[in-house]
Each structure stands twice: as C-alpha cells, then as structure tokens.
Length: 162
Image (cartoon, rainbow, N blue to C red):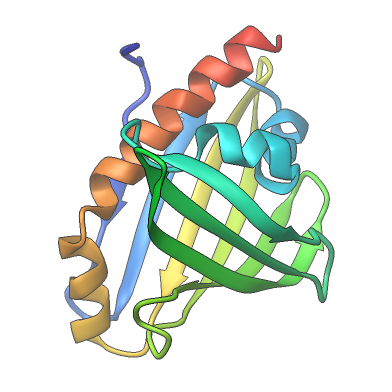
C-alpha cells in the first residue's frame, strides 16, 4: 500500500443532502479525466483495495450509460449503474450513480477537473441525493474507505503511466 501526499476531503453539510469530495492529483486534467472515462483505467482504480471491478457497460459520452460490479474472492458483492448526462472532455462529467441494492437512492454527481498548474489537477465532486437518510446511508456504507483507497490507487496508476 502506498501512502499519498494528497488528502481526500469528504464533507457532508448539515443543511443539504449532499456529499462533497475534493482531491488533488499530480497529473494534468486530461489524464485524471481519462482515468474516469476509459473503462479499462476506471476498473483498475475505483473502489477499495479489497475488491476488483468488472465493467459491464461503458459508453462515456453525453447520453451514454455505465455499469460495473465489485467482486471479492471471485464473488460479486455489489454492482452500480448510471447514465452519463454530460461529458465535457477534460473539464466536467455529470452522471447518475445508483447502487443496485438501493435503486431508489439515485445520486446526481458533478465532477469538475480544475487545472492547478505544474501538471496538477483538483478534482471536485458534488453528489446530490434525495434526502438526508439516503446521504447518511451512503456515508455509513464504508464509502469513505472506497473513495480514499481508490484515489490512492489512481495516484499509483497515474505515476506508473507518466
């Protein structure tokens, strides 16, 4: 396991049912963006280290759809799906994100890729859900571990491919 010099900020404001994630990467926006839209790359870094990811469908364009499953020890333990509402290369992705086990808990997520100079990027994610119960359930699901370990794996992937 590699340690990272970048911290992943996860915030859940008390007044709105949202989750905000902010993370910096030592890679240009086009590289961080590509890792979010290329299904082969995405499967290599998304989620906690204890899981592997299989991409089931992936059409990373405005109006496209996606789905992936997480496996542990050869057994599927979770699957997710959604739609790409907007894909603006190297700048922004807007997609829905749904855990198959909670099909009414759809999140609308906006990812923005901000150039920081020096070949660095700040990724901001705003995830909006219907209510506080859904938001708090997501937070209690272990999502924080998956996000933090996933971004550590993305750091490693970006470093290997630089």
